[in-house]
Image (cartoon, rainbow, N blue to C red):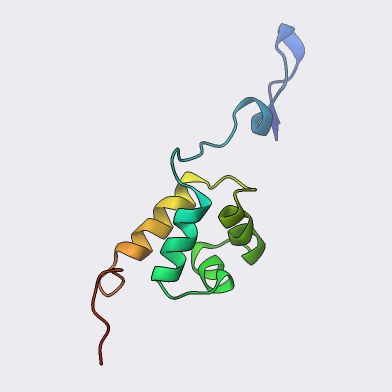
Length: 92
């Protein structure tokens, strides 16, 4: 996507190049994996809930792909819901 007509001396700008997506600082693949396991989800199940592909989740966990702020917030929100606490005792 570009904007600016280029006339009147303005330069066309590519939104994805000039305005990169904001990436959440400090969210690492290991944290995504830990939260996913805490939720007892497969990569495909987490991907479905977050609205991305399973390969994106795999690449996040491997540190190959940065995690968008919206996805990181959603994963943290899912993990913070009642019944998803990692220190909660298992029901017998």
